[in-house]
View 1: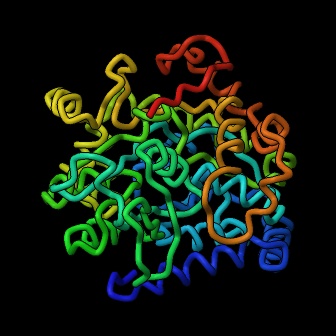
View 2 (view 1 turned 180 degrees about the vertical axis):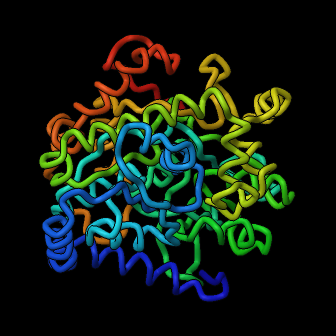
Length: 399
């Protein structure tokens, strides 16, 4: 998308809003049903955006983990926007995607898309990057910052961060006056964020990696705060699959999830190799990003952590979190808390459906964890991912 035409971001959001309505989704769902009937044994078809959130899906493909489970996979399809991801998924062009966790809430309950979360893709992996002359969140008052989408953990977290700093998140048309105690939120494609920050069109952005690391490498921005240092081990993107596959092809679905879980475990143990295979120099050229930028995210030097502790980008040293980490289990407590917070988060478009959502009931209905539980047990349990042996946890959120 072209930065010089900001209406493109707006049009992309409007397209996605149209797709995620009952009327907009209907023709795509009809196409999905036709594809399912004509291709009952369809191979794994991954749709993804070129961000580190897609890492487990791409590693599973690159390392032949789907084939090792006895199922076929096609080369993942690189898509350029969330609207493209949703459209390809609902129409059945792809059958396994990574999707922003709040967006799955919107898809299932805002437009009744018959799909479920089957696993988490990663935890953390995002940050608030600001202009070099900003050293305190309060300095964002009267300015604009970019978010990747209204239904994103980035939007949820940054609004909490702004409110705790005495600032009010707002959504205003371009050119509008922004009060000194307001921060205008602008939806922008991640690839447009670093140049927008460099040209001073925005004063900051909150997004998935590697776009925070890219701003650092280009010396156009600094990380003010990592999102995982605010909401510990939060999910950002999750694995979303069609209900017809989960119900009609349970063995195939189990093998898909097995491969993704094994890919996460491999990535934790081979971070530098993962950065290489995801880069533009990798054999499959999954992303357009340079190896050194991805390495800064997946395999950062120990000295960088000390710098972030000194700057305040990391304030909870005892959490000992990685810049991005991988564990697949979708803790119900997270989904419950996410639903609670979405009810009080500024979003554009029709959000009336949120008022009727019960957090606990949503966590039970949105997520199908039967496959991931079995996959986790097959690799040694949650301990293999450095976690306690429990499928329950307490959410830790500290601004």
